[in-house]
Length: 203
Image (tube, rainbow, N blue to C red; front, side, top):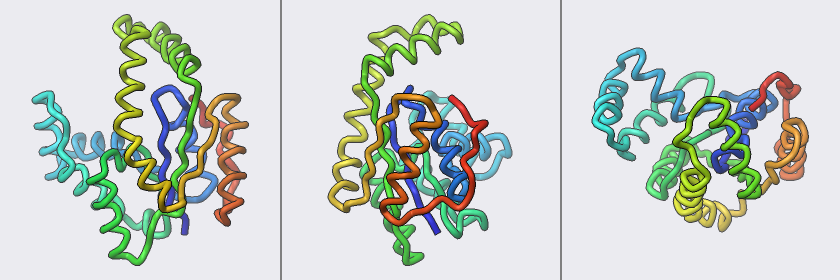
């Protein structure tokens, strides 16, 4: 039963690693973005609420995000473990996740923090923006996005670091190399992969 959280800045390959690690540890990768889209598409009660906030150009409030994640964690495939991607993002969400896990007599086993050189990340994202024709993604815009990420996640990392569950991984290099670093670091903590890494998952 492995419960993981993956945190990393835009452009560091977090999404790719989340999919690979979920495969290796035999747990579902739970992305808040995916959950939002699923609920909106299927017009669930929670999805209707999410859609209203998004269409109004507003952030989805913590209370609603918490409810959607809590609902997803009750699904049968998440009972024996999970990998969270994109949640929690605020201290309040951390406390809510604590409450949810405490109720099950559980806690996060590790928080994988993927770090990467800022200049390298900016170069990656500029290349991606050019390939996707997003002219508004300038270097300044990307750097601002990275600054916001640091500002938002610093309190979370500090909180989890005090609990001794943070594993910091260099996100630069080949995708396979980064995955191997994470798997090795988690193994040192007694968290062992149960299956082969999905080599087809890429950025």
